[in-house]
Structure formats: structure tokens, C-alpha cells
Length: 234
Image 1 (tube, rainbow, N blue to C red):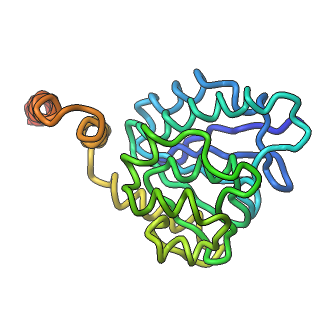
Image 2 (cartoon, one colour):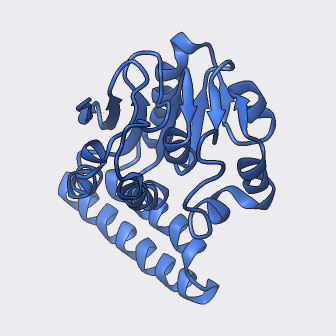
Image 3 (cartoon, rainbow, N blue to C red):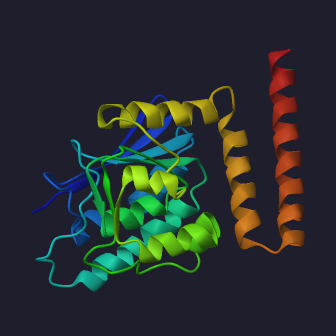
């Protein structure tokens, strides 16, 4: 069982594809290239990210045959932090099964769009192995309790609990996710998109005074950049 995680860019939207059919189970080999993931996200050609699974399955978890699951979990923790604090908007497009390791990845994406019949949750793991600095700040207390206690739920149930942005038929999940991201980034420069995301992350991880100071610096940078572009155009 090899599998791979593929990185591609389609019209400014970076696609991260979990590919290990039929269930797209994760292995340590698939998740070890953290530098590759960081470099892909940091590519200025990428204005947004869409993560999904090969075929009509997101990710059913990890293989039962992994000799050292701790190494996979350690790598997943690092990936989750990268996704939770990505410099661009991120959507998890969830179809089929999204369990354990797959669910861990999905809930660290700021937005999830799923099919109503998708199976989501922690089954074998009995809870997330990374929580305090990522899930709680981004999802809030109520949603975090649901993540911890619900077990396996459907996409439709996850939408009612506020864990999923919206549900659409399975055949439309990828298209709906792209449309959601396109609405966020259209007519906005890559610098502006990244500045907005950095401000959002600063609000979560910095004291208020420091976050406001950082936002002021970002605003000045964007205004200066826009003025420079306007002068060149004129």
C-alpha cells in the first residue's frame, strides 16, 4: 500500500488530493513530506486550497497494518497546524467516508462542504489526538464538544451542528467547493487574500493589542502595494 498526496494548481486554486483507493487510507509515507506541503501552500500562485479524496471517498482513516501509528499521528498533527493556519482560504470537500485521520484533517480546514450522506467522525481513535491549539480556537466550544462526543455522524447531521458549511449532492461537492473559494478570491489580489488570512489567524493566536498592531502593519502594506500598482498602470 503506497498511496500518495498530490499537489496541483487549477486557476489559482491549489488542490490537495488524498490518493490511496478505495478508502484513501493514510500511511506515514503519504504524510511525511511536510516541506512539500508548506512549499505548495506558500506558492504565491495559490490563492485558495481545496483538499479532497480520490474518487468518491474523502479518507476512511489510516491502515490497521501500520506498525507505528504514533509516527503517522505526529505527522498529522503538523499537517493539521499547517491547514488550520494556512495563509489562504481552505475548504475540505467531503464525500463518502471521512473518519479518524481523515476527519482530523477535515475539521482543521476552516470550511467543510460535504455530501449529506458522508460518514464523518472518530471511530477507531475515540477522539482527536490534537485539539487544544487548533480545533477549539477555530471551531468554538459548542462545535468542539460535538467533535469530541458525537462519534460518527452524517454530513447532514454535521451541517445542523454547524460543523459543515453546507451539504450538496455527492456529484456536486467538488464544484460547490470550488465555487465557494472562487467567490472569496475573485477580484482580490493574492497579497490581499493572504493579508486577510494572516489577520484572522493573528486574532486567534495573539493578544488583542498585538493582533491590532499587526493588522495595522498589514493594512499599510496592502495600501502601499495597491498605490504602487495604480501608479504603474497610470
